[in-house]
Length: 178
Length: 113
Image (cartoon, rainbow over all chains, first blue to last red; front, side, top):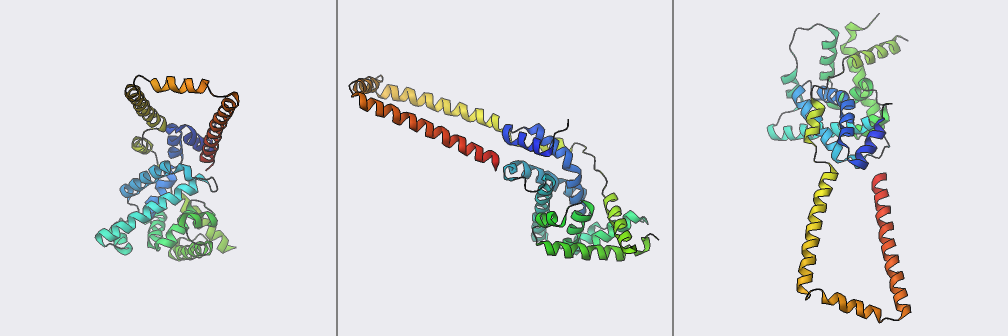
């Protein structure tokens, strides 16, 4: 029988079982790294560094996980905070802004596929809309969970998702199925 | 109706645009960076405490003229009236029990939070 996230967390808390924590990392690494890759606009190395940092922070603070939300939601929140802190630090250090980052990382490959257009359209969204769309539409979080992750009011999340989706729909209008 | 279909289509495309990322050593890298397990840290702390206690005991024994104060204290204790001995035993028992309860409560809170 497979252990639940709750069982594994209990093992980490009671016995400081690092194998149990390893299993939690294995289970959630894909979604956390995926989210960070999208947030960093496909900068794989940076996203993986941030993901590593997020899991280490999760291990150190696992006692503050109260089980009110899903473990994945709690992890997303830590990952998002790591991303935000890093973005702030980079901006302070080298004075780069979102638009500059986008220009640097925008893939200029001649890929006419829907996937490429979708990623491009996502990258065009401002960070607050992109994060809300990624969490709710891609990672399947409820609006309430996304509000907790992003630490913003529920109404703002709903607005950001709505606006983000509208923009994506407009950009991808040519791909709309009949 | 078309609008709902389009939204479903968009959500599906977004989900498919996030394929499963293979671990490729990621978990191992995270585990390598974790601090040593608590029981290892605990046993190290235990060893330090034991050494300090032993050193302090030896020092106290040497400074107190071979532990003469213990003999004096026990002699005094035997001369105490029965009631005082009873009160002393009861007080020590309550003190130890209170310590145990406090430790149990704090451990329970730690595990619940």
